[in-house]
Amino acid sequence: MKRFIAILLVAASCLVACQTKPSSDTVPTSPSNITTTKPTTPGKKPVVKQDYSHLFAPEERFGNVKVNELSADGTYVSGNYTRVDGATVQKYPRLTNLPTLYLDFPDGKDLSSVQHGVYTEATYTFVDEYVEHSYYNLPLQIKGRGNYSWSFAQKPYAIKLGEKADFLGMGAAKKWTLITVGSDKSMMHNYLTQKMAAAMGLRGTCENEYVDVVVNGEYKGTWVLTEKIQIHEERIDVPDEIGVLFEIEMVYRHSCDFCIVLYEDRWNHDNSVHLRLKTYKGTDIEDMDIRQREAARAELQPFFDKITAAMTDSRVTVKKLSKYIDVDSFVNWYLLNEMTRNYDSKFVTSCYCFINEDGKLYMGPVWDFDTCYGIQTPDTDGYWVSQAPWYTWLLDCPEFFTLTMERWTELQDSGLLESFYNSIGQTAERIAQSEKLNHTLYPVSELRNDSFEGSVKFFQDWLTARLEWMDSEFYIEADQPTVAPPPAVTTTTVTTTKRPPRYPKS
Image 1 (spheres, rainbow, N blue to C red):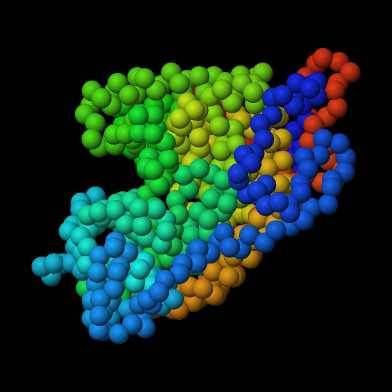
Image 2 (cartoon, rainbow, N blue to C red):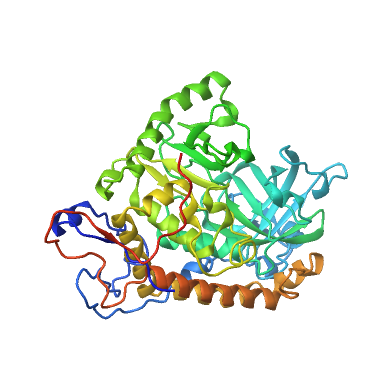
């Protein structure tokens, strides 16, 4: 498919002033041996690629006492700096090369006793390779979470610890989630996409790691232990008195009288899009009464009205947009979700944004990729996210579209996308022991694949084709300028070979 190029014929000096560049602390611009250029004239300098495979694997942790090798004699210092005896450590071995999470329920209860949205008391033991990174016999509460995924045999859960724990160096916190791999038989979609988001520099991206889960002494499967999306010093690090967190969702998925209107569909109200307030200046929505919620909505609605007005202005520039939004986060969020062809990223559900201390709106953290990569939307060609309200307007702005091209070229030339692809095979090898245990309980039964190996190959093949399409649309060739020279006349002209599908406007 022929590349779609947005060319805005304006004075070069004005365009340079209006553009915002990707943050210097995001991959791939940080390694010193990478050179990339944003070609405003034909020709590109040579690029040195970097191996980013370490970004898609857990950080190596060191210790003095290995869990599966110690003696029952003596006592040892655990992850929360309390002493644990050797007999207890031996009672909770690590099942595979992955961490193991033990859950013990009282009074004959087990995981099947846990209800959706209702906390159940239990105790947990978290076992990593070394005792120093492990936690023993501590209290927690666990409840069911998710929407459609709650119908799976292997369900998702939210957990709240009695006291903060720093699992695997992800940062000390009380609230965590157990993400199911029930609909993704490669077991990698959520795990690797969160890693990719972090590598791209999307702020507040949730860290994660695989865990084998044992309940009352019985193995129950493999989950992805993931940070909860929240305003928190170890998650979205925004001061409580400033930070506001939203979930973007279509109206048909919720009932909400105090939601903020993002887009109103005149013909089908169910397709309208709201911003659901999750946290407001240090207070979770569940802890706010109706009066407080309505006051917050009334305060925030004008801010989003200004964003919509800026995006729908036919004369919009990136400079004008950057008064209200962090443009880099909007670019990165778009490219990641377009690459994965995330069904929900049309602002159906599970799309998050937050107000930062600079007063601007940031896209992210990203969430929920289990049915991406060809599972729910099998085609590898074509625009997808461009049908979401904000993005249909943003992609009509030639400057914004140019930024998406420049950023995609940067990600491709640096080697980050290649490392992401390679991480599929590397991760499959790392989780091989756990995968066999998990799929004994939850057999692979996807429409297109009847084995783990088949699911992995489908993931790789689909991603290869999708990356080729993304390159055809966004990659800047050596002889392809992203910005035209100054025009001979003052008339603004936009030249394209095609446009992405447009979201209906009110």
